[in-house]
Length: 216
Image 1 (tube, rainbow, N blue to C red):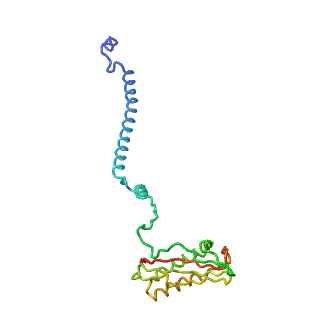
Image 2: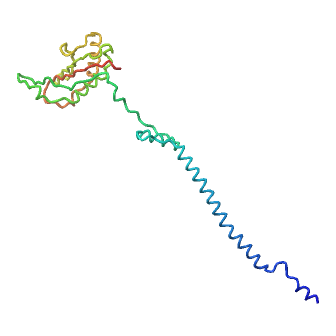
Image 3: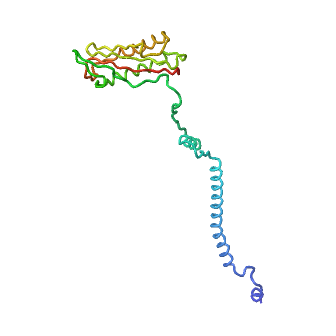
């Protein structure tokens, strides 16, 4: 009698094994869904961050120079770039020099060589032009446009260089400035040695005309 009553009431869980299996399956299926949700959330944050980064980053204008573009990139990355400054192409030099001219060359004896056949003393010419440029401030700005012709008499027999400022080759009227310029150039040329200078004649005269712009 007792056995019949027990069998007449259905169990509370007719499929206990199936129920446990389904719950476990749902739990396993939920793990990939959570992982996908987390990946999608991370991707969304990354996209938003990239958009803000690109929106706020400095942009160089289309006509910007390479240096400006590099500076913008450096500011974005937090690095420092030193760009060398170029001199202003419109700025005038304090003195402008003509081409160096060999106006005479000679050897011992009556024979004379035409000036156009004389060879050039490159090291002496460079030293002369450098000396004139170094003494460019000897002419005051008020005398802008004035000229001085410097003539270097180079004697290899005497191992000596003498610099003159002929009257015919200058327009500078300021006597004090003229003396100062001549003294400065002569002083710079006194230290020049002639032993290693290649030459084809015993004596030369080379000339350079300096035009002073009044710029400092």
